[in-house]
Image (tube, rainbow, N blue to C red; front, side):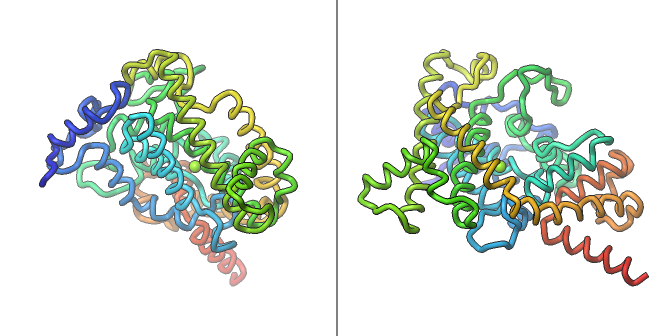
Length: 383
Ligand code: MG
């Protein structure tokens, strides 16, 4: 049995809700292409993201704990894979387009700098007089301009739906792409990628924070959401304390958040009478969201993580040392552009030296940035 493209479209029609983005409704690519006989456009987009160099580099970029600090800590790559899996679950449960939600999830962190939060703060500081730096916009630059693969254009020529899904839509300010004004809210699939990212890191950063010994169960117990997740673990017959109890509690935490998003979003789809994709983009509210009760509990968890994990002195001290090297690299490349790679240099004329240097450094893995930094330091010592 062979499933041709036409069959896939038919399958999509019968499988997805009318408010899902369908492949046949796509507004297409910047540079028109022939259709593929076996893959839909969103499938092709997903594969294109997976085959980028930027995606492969995620393996060696810090999520929270400096890359290489421990074998079990999440990296940008494992974080991204977890986000993609959770997004597929939510999209499938709500009869939305899984391929589109997954593709946006897989691409969402392609613009992250090395060294996690500290790296991003360093890059914001470096670029403050040159147009700023935003990791969401950077992901867009990566897929639209910086990846070099095709003969006739820069970037990987993704569909309009994936490209707009990577741009944060603003309710308070008009956002444009290719001269078109974007609606105040993104597609439901892009909203899934957004909340999928949040709930994924809430779950895994608790896990990694515990693993690193920065937080403990006693501290977490003060939060209602952790208490609910532990209650589930206790009900399953596990005794409190120990690795299995902890691991199962984290598992319950993630599961509870995913279920809440699915149930609440399904209610919102009814409540706001979402019938077509465009209804969700203009209805004046975020459709894919936590219930008010979970919103409160997850916000408390997020604040807890900021206070006790991301800004823990053990994390921020090490990451800060590493981030300082980005500033030195920036100074070097602005002064000596010939030290950058060939592809990066080719953009100096159109984007200017500062943006080009920022693109080049933002794309680096932790280890490559440190290696380049060592080279500069050694060269200085030899003088
Ligand atoms: Mg992320």
